[in-house]
Image (cartoon, rainbow, N blue to C red; front, side):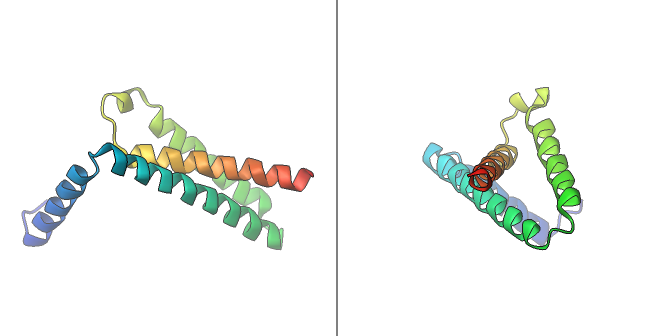
Length: 110
């Protein structure tokens, strides 16, 4: 990639955000927000997909595919050598999403 001013700006912003998230409390708060957003996303997807009841199987297959791809990325052997915040927050989002779907299933069963 070329060394332009815009590219240098984005690199500086990414570097500063990386330094900012090295603090354990900020990292934990970001992961907690990721979990809660995954929980919200799971509730929103299940209610909107169940509303029309036309594409339930396609949406379920797509969601299973996304969770499996996320698991493949997170549990890769090379991941533990480099602990990326983006990949870790994506995995926590997946956990919140899955937890939300289990809670929705228990609501429907009662």
